Length: 348
Image 1 (cartoon, one colour):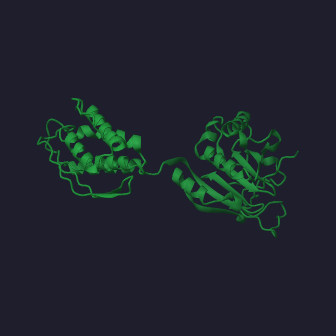
Image 2 (cartoon, rainbow, N blue to C red; image 1 turned 90 degrees about the vertical axis):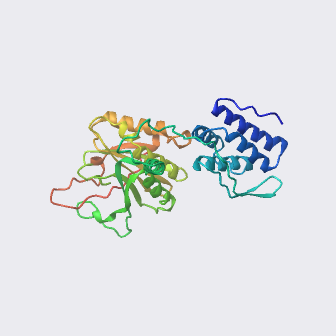
Image 3 (spheres, rainbow, N blue to C red; image 1 turned 135 degrees about the horizontal axis):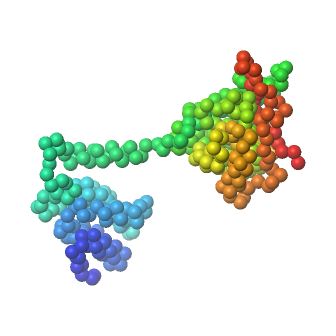
């Protein structure tokens, strides 16, 4: 085996040590106690804080590869070195290539007696009462804060429209608002969105039923006072592509991709999906149908973001103002009856 010449640079020394450990494991097949002895010999001359960068380096390189005995041993070994300042304690059972089981028991390693002051201020003030344990707790709290759910820029609500077979139109051609139902909890984070999306299989939505993902404050009805001057793009999508297409359009909405392409003063209201006999009708609603640049940019953004296999043909999408729908009727100020949006298929 080649001799181990430790470099004055601690990081380089550790890299050389790890290289020799790997060389022993892969080439010489020395027993595991030899690895322990070599590791102790190398680390006894190093200050532990200098070992942290190499810990991170090894974890980045070998993250997730727990099937390899050597990498798993190095991972556990570095973890215990860093977490215990005065001893290395391991009680881990490893299975080697020959399926022999070796139990690593307590291995005490005396460190060089020195006061480690790296990272500490040269003088402590009267109010500096934090112990190393408290500092570690603070670091843990900061890490947990960073792991909190990633909030969305806007809050979103999910609506479901279940049209009954015996549902009758009123005299003015509108449906009752009772057919529209808000479902689930409000979506306030990326995790909330995926929780909703993964538990709402599109292929189980029945014929002529619809689902909508709308910003808080908007309702998926033409006559909603924040939608009344708006319009929507509608895409006819084969049922085989519907779930993927729908997820991507929702991500464009929640990720503010669609809002970002609109003109100043215009707003994205939400997106919707309606089930038809052999296709899904997926719509994108915005607030101001008078802004032609918004209309053009919405279409361009969707077509740009979709992969080639999902791009619809030109005769499978169209734009329409809400007020141009046959069932649209602006509600008087003293009524609560509104039209349930029924997405129309493009006329070919």
